[in-house]
Image (cartoon, rainbow, N blue to C red; front, top):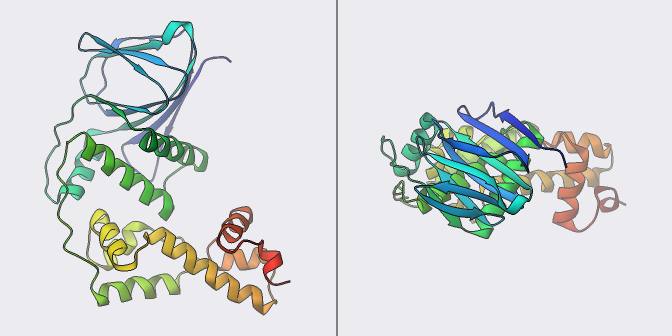
Length: 271
């Protein structure tokens, strides 16, 4: 396989750049970055040197590299490896850390290698989703992005999370519910829902789950599918029209979600 490197800016998240690379003969000389790097080796093994020590990075490990940290990298024993990175500006990290902790401050980031196969796998899948979809505008991707970034910052002990006071108030939940019911065909963002409650995104995510027992995305997805069932049973609209009416602009995505929820394809549901 030939070597390549691809960079992609995520427009919905200012300060975030994704990179995907395949390396064999190429090696990184000693260098540093001005942004915060989250590195994931999805295939093969990379040997990384920092602070006079050498570590091996492979599937299941997460490399956290703060701004200014001097390091290098190369394939281990002449092999090939695939490297995926999230490159986060210092402003982006500071903003997210402030939301998590509830106070404005610049977190003290340090280099670390986390051995967490579950978290690493989730980050690789999120990286692929952002790359393939060209952004992070959907409620599902927004939720995954913030939740996983919170996990990284907490594991690196860069922030102390703000205490969540409890569930949403009935009036807050009512505003969220009515907003979603009235806009099923539209794109709904995490920022919009949090603003309805006068909350930050992290606090809203936690309070919503305490209230409902599901994430906002999971609840909204089910709401859309339940409404789709009603439209399908009426039998007067094409499946593609039903999918668009409940916020699915990709019919294949609608079919997969429907089958996963009800065990049959939409065409079989109303047969």
